[in-house]
Image (cartoon, rainbow, N blue to C red; front, side):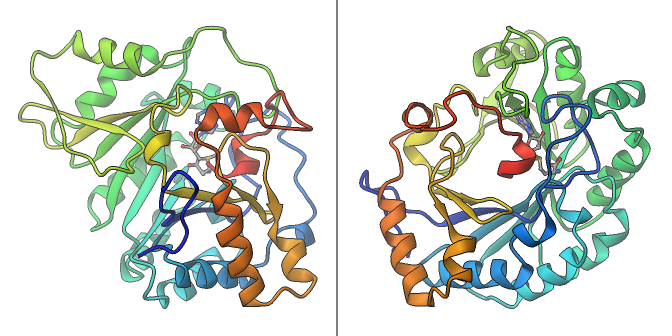
Length: 331
Ligand code: SAM
C-alpha cells in the first residue's frame, strides 16, 4: 500500500527512472540530427544513487519501476544494475523501455532476472524508413530483438509513435502484426519533446484519429478491460492473438488515474511528464540527505502533483516552451 498520495487522492506506486541521457539512435521526433547536449558523466546519477532512490521509494510503497533513458543499454553495467534491483522484493514489477538495437544478447539474462515486460520502440516495419526516422541503420538488429523477445518469456509491447508524413500508412500493418504474434502494439500520440522546441508538422494524429484509421479496416474490434492507472486504452481484433492500444500522451485524457513519478538521469524529480522538474535529488543526496530526509521529501513533493499535464505545462517557470528531448526526461 503506497504512503505516497497527492492532494487529489491519487496513490503513487510507479517510478519511471531514466538511467542515462545518451542514446544510440537519433529519432527525428526525439532529438535533432546532431543529438542533444549530453551532460558530463559525473552529473548523471550513479547506479548506487539510483539503487538508493529505488530502495527508499519502495519502502514508501512504490512497487513498479520502468527503466528508460536515453537508451538504458548504452550505459555500462546497466545489466548489473538490473541484477541488484532484482534483489529488492518490494518491487513487484521491473520493466524496461528500449530501442532494442543492442539487447538481443541480453534476453536470457533479462529472463533470469525476472524482468516482466520489455517495451520495444519501433516506429516502422520498413528498413529504409527506419533509417530515415532514427537516422541510424539498425532495423535488422531491432527486428531480430523483436523476434527473440517473442520467443522469450518476457511480455512484449511495441511502442509506435504516430508520425504524420512518416508512418501513418503503416498503422494497419502494425495491427496486422497482432494477428499471429503475442504482443501488444501501442500507438503513441506524438508529443513536443523533440529537443528543438519545434513541432515537426502542424498535424497531430490524436487518439480519435488513430482509432478511426484502424476502425476503417476492421469490423470487429473489442475494447479490453484495463487497470485504472493504465496509460493506454487497449483493444483486440476478433480472433487475433495480440492486442493493440492507443496512448493519449499529448491529449492527456489519462491524468486522473495517474500513479507515476519520474526521475531523470541527472536526478531531477518530476511529478508529471509535462512539468520542468521539481526537485534535484542528486544534489540533495550528495549534500548528505539521510534516508528519512529523502522519505519526507518524497511524501511532501508528491503532494504537489498537478491535477493534470495541462496544469503542469502551464506552471512551468523558466521553460514555458517545451524544448527538452524525451531522451533527457526519460520516456
Ligand atoms: N531509448 C529507449 C527507447 O527508444 O525506447 C527509451 C527512451 S525513449 C525516449 C522512450 C519512448 O519515448 C520511446 O518509445 C519513444 O518512441 C518515445 N518518444 C520519444 N520522443 C517522443 C515524442 N516526441 N513523442 C512521443 N513519444 C516519444
